[in-house]
Image 1 (cartoon, protein in one colour):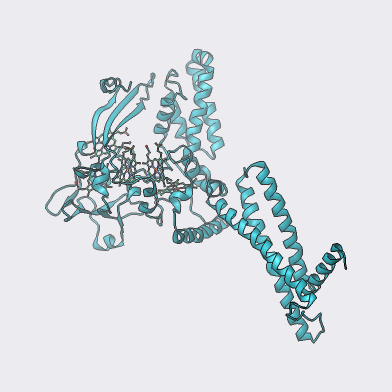
Image 2 (cartoon, rainbow, N blue to C red):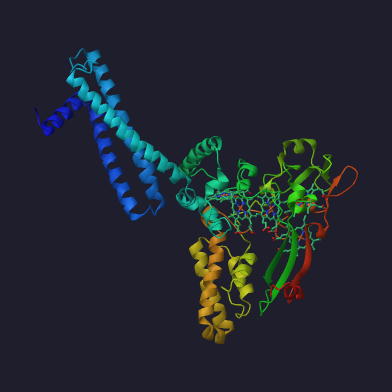
Length: 484
Ligand code: HEC
Ligand code: HEC
Ligand code: HEC
Ligand code: HEC
Ligand code: HEC
């Protein structure tokens, strides 16, 4: 009886003789064994360390190594068959393949090896593909692996109400067909990144975004009655005192209630879409015609009295049914304009209103043109410190810490909104909610879209919101509402 060790050696020799008598298969065996062992080893380390921290580590562990492993596997039989063919052509004698017969010990050895190896490989590859998909769906892969390219979207996302949900929830959603589509276009994007053929900045709107019904509505739905919502907006004047100006709106968000579909959500979205429009430009900012299905089911067509496209231009326009993204086009990549970014930091207390003219000075610095984010940060730091040192030496001395804190906050506003590497400048992506910074709602509600019988799309301030206070220094309403 041969010992276990002898049996294993014999086993290994037979397998190697049958499968590995050529360079190609030998390379395959070496590559597969080496990557197989290192994969298992690295996975164990990773598990012990509690998950990968760097986006690339996941990519290497679960995408690159498994790919090399599979490539090695493919080489083994490929070499075997290539060698056979070459031998046959050259009329060379070779170790004959074992007869397919389970009673032959040689065949049994090769057979057992192949079965065990296949099971082990299937487990490895299965686990790797599962983890690989997880990696591809992670925020790290989407947002960080392509550093420069996705940096703006990632930065804006981090400060948004959606920063706890994955990129894929909105960009891919559930179901196999979008999954496959996204992987296909993802591959194109990876190629574009590698060849640097992507557009800078990445343009919006996203042409082939999955319909909001299938993504946003997994978590929010328009019929839900959301009623009215009080919105308090604080701005700061560019004066010495950085005077606070407060606007209080009661937004008629609406939804579905006993009266039917009401308010902003109800009027545009019902059980299905009720509005479609034709936009003349890529950015969907110039809306030439709007078609509306009213509560009685009648369709009313409106046309812009301002844009008067030729029939040809109209035919070339993009026809779209309105969904969430036509208003909430920045639900998570909410880039700010410089004054809005500063207002936010002042409200949050990161920039002290006790620093005279801080809003005005910071705004000027933010609007400068810089080569990189670092250059901007330096200019902002130097500029603000120099301003107080020169104009308000006492404050520069007594409020040193506040100035330092303000510098950091202003730099942060720049860093989350302007990306010279990607040519992303202030206000590149319009925000369609509102009407002050961008046309937004007024693309249709600006009073210049009329139906055939001369009725305009409503432009009444009160239809959308009650304005309880407008840029007031000390609105009484806040005290009345108990919001002060
Ligand atoms: C709450 C849903 C949501 C999440 C989460 C989300 N996105 Fe988006 N994203 C959108 C929408 C909606 C648009 C389309 C905007 C448009 O068409 O104007 C978009 C557009 C983009 C664009 C095109 C450029 C632009 O700014 O419009 C990129 C790039 C992008 N997203 C990357 C990401 C990355 C990376 C993540 C994860 C870090 C992510 N997105 C997470 C909803 C989301
Ligand atoms: C996976 C679930 C999920 C998906 C998908 C999702 N959201 Fe959200 N959304 C949330 C959560 C959670 C919040 C935060 C609620 C909070 O902070 O109170 C939120 C908040 C919001 C808000 C409110 C922000 C505010 O000012 O209060 C808007 C608007 C919004 N989402 C729009 C969208 C749109 C548009 C989409 C699709 C492009 C979308 N969401 C997709 C979960 C989701
Ligand atoms: C006609 C434009 C429009 C459309 C279409 C639209 N919304 Fe809104 N939505 C608004 C406005 C305006 C607000 C008020 C919030 C604000 O002004 O910031 C709002 C508020 C919200 C909020 C916050 C609600 C709250 O009470 O705090 C969520 C969540 C939201 N929308 C999700 C969606 C989703 C999901 C869809 C698509 C099913 C959608 N919206 C379609 C304009 C729209
Ligand atoms: C079609 C709907 C609609 C109409 C009509 C409308 N608004 Fe608004 N308004 C909005 C929305 C949406 C916002 C954005 C609220 C937000 O930023 O969350 C807004 C914001 C505002 C703000 C705050 C601006 C800011 O961001 O600081 C003021 C002030 C305002 N509206 C005044 C008016 C006045 C005055 C009228 C009438 C001439 C009017 N609006 C008409 C929808 C409308
Ligand atoms: C693509 C065109 C379009 C855009 C963009 C649009 N709306 Fe509308 N909206 C309509 C149409 C059409 C109607 C129905 C006709 C009407 O009520 O005058 C309507 C109706 C409304 C109504 C009901 C008015 C009433 O008198 O009952 C509200 C409120 C409203 N929209 C708010 C908004 C807000 C807020 C935004 C921006 C966030 C917005 N809309 C953006 C087309 C649009």
